[in-house]
Length: 278
Image 1 (cartoon, helix red, strand yellow):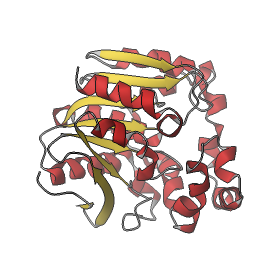
Image 2: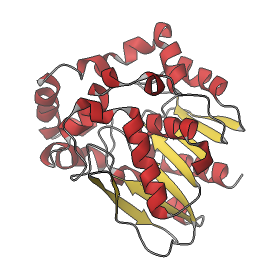
Image 3: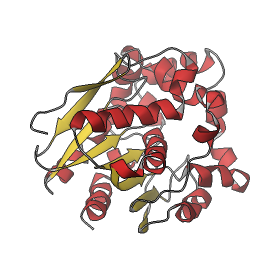
Image 4: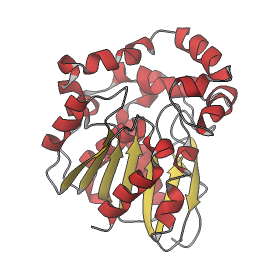
């Protein structure tokens, strides 16, 4: 664990990584969501470094230029879990502290449930446990998640999102704060990442039974949720505790929206540090 990791491989795919902070610090892996890249953590990471932690933020499958398979089935959750485990193996660590937001949060829940022996602690921002998410559908979550079905329509989402993200206020219309809002065009559209990013949604019909049923989590966990989240409602957030059989904290950020890494980095970093050092 003496060298920085700038990339790692899983099968034929190579992923880019931002590796910062004290090299000897406890490794914290940060998983981004949609439409984000590893740089979504740039306000959170320095706060973790100040507490002696090392951070590794990969550009995930579909986003990293050398890891953009075109087949929808290549975005099954089992494949994404394999990507995260490949990073841990490349790092040479027995265990890591794992953090995820949005789709990265969905992946983090899955990794912690399937490979608990590799995860020391889990912190998830915004995204409830997948089983709680499904249970909350008849309690209003389905109205918040309509876009997940819309993104499975061929070609139309690419046309719409390309036009939206290339406009001056495209990222801001989603609620992203600056400077992150202005980066969406370059990071997602101009870089060619949009089809792969959408394939996280389009791969869901190809999920097998294990992909669809994330198991109970048995590692110490903190779930951070903003009570103004437009995409993920209170019902799923409150039910998440029922799927963690380990020390658990549900931390609510008041007047916070979905974009916690970008808009509330101090509070999110504090939650991560509290969990890692508990």
